[in-house]
Image 1 (cartoon, rainbow, N blue to C red):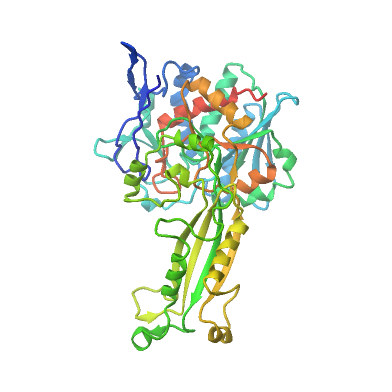
Image 2 (cartoon, rainbow, N blue to C red; image 1 turned 120 degrees about the vertical axis):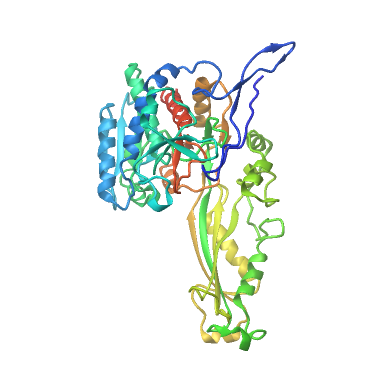
Length: 531
């Protein structure tokens, strides 16, 4: 019997105190019932000895020092010189492992491609990482320089206490963390993969397939450089399967596979009142306020349960019994999620958090009127604009979803234009809306029982001897979705860092336990049979 106890780790900020420890399972015969628990305070997250445990333990201090060195290289994409220094470091690291390196020309920074051909008759696995990190505001960090990594442990009061890096030469606690920009997103996974490749080489083990590695130097800036290379270098990127090593694992830190992510489309809607802002005393009760018009229009798009009522918005989405079983196997608990969000009742689009991600969403991300200065003015604004994003799933097309929104506005009685209205139009129509839409980026999804999905589950299962968390679709959108769709390669995301890593925010960090787990996951994948 497998008994897994899951507690909710903070998914909002590492400044929150740890609520629980993660529990694992054990075995013990007690009459006819097996009830032995083992507490997860060890480096190894599973029962018994991992096949590579001794090797990983032996190199761990050096790995963490190397990660410190990699994170210490500033990597904001706007500084091209910094990014080229990062690329040069990786060129040597992968070159020393027998990879051939190419820096593929793009519209901006080059795309780093490392290749190792074992046998032309073998299948090829393409890995994607990104080398750049988000910009930083040092004043918001609890360390002097976000690019000078800091080793920390919990102080017992919900905060963090600095440790000397010499502590790595002693007993390493998997709950310690390394703070620094890109420590998790995405230099953590890159370090894990380099370590796994080096361990393979040290044991004289040969890859069972041909391997390609993309390092995107501008992912945090939108991956425009990488996207510009797709057509010219399609042959260079050609592979049988693709693994994207980015993003956080499930909050339980159980090995996680993510099989897709939602896309995103956008539109802006502007409605009008008088041509110029008016004094609310002189014209209140007479000049229509466009904010109320917008409020009524937006309210017509959703019911009180949060369900979108735009015609056809959920068309084509059916969750069969097999799909529901995949979703129900994910160890989420609505009450814990609600407590973290501090909400009483979630929207009723799905019965659970995971189920809600299988449907497209409609979100108002910003509303604005004419006055944007400091303070308040007693005016009736002349316009109101709502900026909307529509998250997409594989069954929906961005352009079609945006068109459904537009048709709904027309159905509500508005004259819909793609420009500002003329004075004549203002006088002839009581309801006018200016609409600009963008179909954006469509979603991707690889089925959980696809060949790649099953191979990953088998390979990682051999290393961990336990069930994994299988995420059918994650909520966010990654910039390289168009590349995944254009290359037409079955892709799965293998997220390895802790959920509460503060990626894109101050005090980004990585939990050392996730570094250890990630190395084991990489080793499992590097030994995976693709035939």
